[in-house]
Image (tube, rainbow, N blue to C red; front, side, top):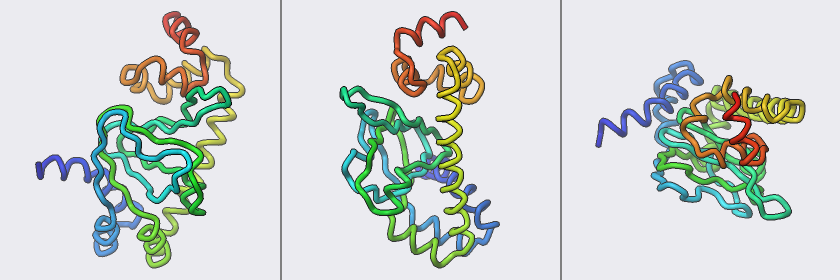
Length: 196
């Protein structure tokens, strides 16, 4: 059990060490603020309308951020795998109700930090504050690039984009989820994927 805990927190520790330039005292302080959550497959981490109170670092598994359209059809906003962090950042920052849902696509382990501790670290550790600023900028840049690419790309090109940029998702996730992420009808996705 201890070995698995070390394995799963190692990625988070490495990320924090890099961001804080190996300032050991601050690294240990930051690590102490994270709490481990184990999620079963399909467990909800966040529901639309709930206040987003945590930043999550995925140490094992896969999360899906999704919204419902006007017809109550699920639309995948993001798929997050090991070594990545995720939360509804806009809502987290302003303590507003979430506009999205986050669910575990498979059994997952997440390290979370609550907003109070997160803000404390931003205010007291300048490098942590700079890392947060970078995280915000990277988040908005990623969203803008993805929207821009998906608006400009055909369905076939979106599948190729995923094969080039996140190939592990093609074998890891069900076609329905990948199709939702790429904003392609699942039947069209299956047909196009078979041709590639």
